[in-house]
Length: 84
Picture 1 (cartoon, one colour):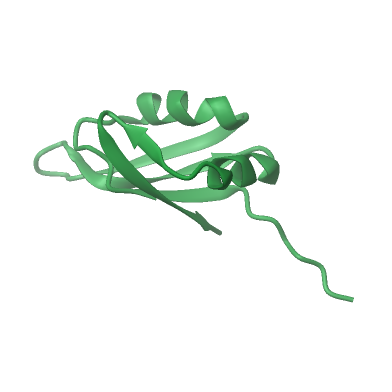
Picture 2 (spheres, one colour):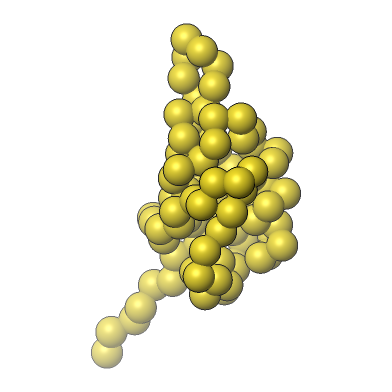
């Protein structure tokens, strides 16, 4: 018998360079309780590198995010992928 493990983390890419962790948390909080947000920043410029990670308390939140056909943050169509 196979057990399918549900993921509770997503990879978000194509973020605008102005997005920070609190904005990303606020956006995805509508899908469920967010446990961790990381936006990757360039050490020299301090600007977003255009990608980050969002972890949810429940895997059901990831399913809700993925059911939506697209996500727009600050005018950018961001790309979402489930990840471990």
